[in-house]
Length: 238
Image (tube, rainbow, N blue to C red):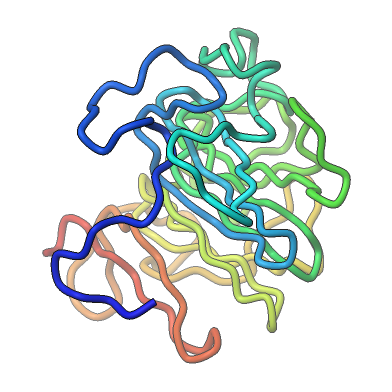
């Protein structure tokens, strides 16, 4: 579709009308502070990080109807629940303030930046079902961990994700540690360490920095040039 300045939206999710603000109680067709989006082009699935409802919704976007219901929920046991960590302790089935999602076509892995638990959850969407548990976690050594820290295997409030599927790379904006981590997705396992970092000179560093090598609360990531160029939204160094 050709873009024009001020053009109208063609479809609507999370609300039934364009002028509504509050979309209503938590359900399969409502959203609260949606942040991150990812698409599975092959199966025409849209993943939405529904931050304030502490869940990820999956929509069938073969066609989009105003107010259409999600076909699946992850992070809650049903479409009407919204408590952080599903009202339980930190685990493989709940999340707290998911801020970004990224889908890797070659593995069918869905990565979720679970910000308040300082971790990234990895779901195998080849075997997807409602309320499914994550298969792996990055940023913590177990699914019960939620403490923020530095190091190659830890995180603090991850906020954005980007996938380079060709080179099997996952980039994570580790916002609280003022850095970007890179993981090898061919070697994903629980507690796997990052293989590279940007924004700090050592794995134990976390201070914000200026100049060409520093970052301060990086909040957005995007890949260009077929995955060869990484763009970083350096939030507090505007």
